[in-house]
Image (cartoon, rainbow, N blue to C red; front, side, top):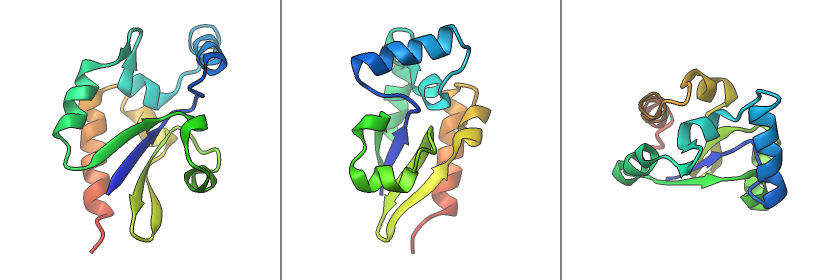
Length: 121
């Protein structure tokens, strides 16, 4: 199973400026960004957690998704999506990610719970 953690932001230069404005001026943030990043980049806690998972986990910006994943996600970012035999499955939506309040341990518990609930036979 491959897991995609998708930000509600674009990864290009203008996207980063736009996100910075949204977060620090308009006080709107991306829950997935809050979980995985701090002001200096990817959190060390995120790196540590992702190295210990049994699954391949990848962080993606909106503009980094392939067309099939983008069609499935359909502008419902941020979210966490699993690539499974039958296609894609949402593991966590915006509200569930927001409930983690940027905490890596809360995210990991949520992710592990969702993986068990959605395990393919």
